[in-house]
Image (cartoon, rainbow, N blue to C red):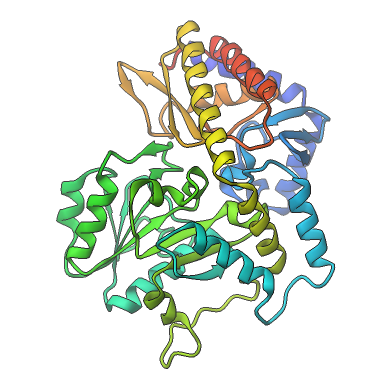
Length: 418
């Protein structure tokens, strides 16, 4: 057994010993849910902590253990858990009915708020998730151009539905993220759209090289393809979306997470000529259905979430994230562990550095990542197995100081990646 394996085994056993109720919850979950979960990313060994409640920046599990929440449901809870204004928006809305086969004022409030924030968005089509938004954008692009091929980045993520969920999808071409030449070479007359994120989210929070996205937008338009920017995670990082910070004008923008205030939602926004293709008033329109599209409670909570996330709140989040990234880097160096924190706004990802090279493949050095994850969990810091964290407006300076101290202790315990 290697030193890393031995360290992981010790941390794993200590984690499991403190969580008998979570172990029991996992056993019950495996009886009724395949793999004991309904969302692959939430699984980790030896078993996940069963979270019972969350308030602000604090989570409580089935064993009564508390954590500082740095997952925030994978960036969707930008204001933390159970924010009073969002809870009240949900409560007051569903008290008058939760879903109608009709347009509702909360949907209009949310759509107007989105369009006023993001300059490229003239119309908005609501869905139930970011995955559904991606699928709808693909349909719009194909309908508008009469083409089939979609280009995405290797390591990019646009949801868990076709055509983006299958690595063998024949009409989806992958190119290395940040590689201008590879993108140019892939842009044939068959391409309907280029789908890119402002940074690789699930791929390790790797920001785009300077100028890459602007060049991609121009290259797509040169061959008559649409440029689709996935701001499902990135929208939180700038008052006008990351596209506003970079001076981009995507044809379509994908949104979700923070625009639902903690409830399930997604949206496609963009040029009116493209979104009008889905209008039932248009002959031969592209039909887009969904029983819960624009769920009134999600729209109400999302509207309040965006109103709370003003320029000052975003600036504070980003500044705190920058300070935390630097603090963790210092603690890693002090602990003799080579690691680097990549960052996009208030979203971060810690990666080990091996043989002088930055590791940004979140599947690499899995046991080191797992050991660090469980070590942090046992210190009361709720993080993701792949090393991604993100900040919420609910975090205090004391919380962030505790987080930095926990990283120092966990990195010392885990040691360098092999």
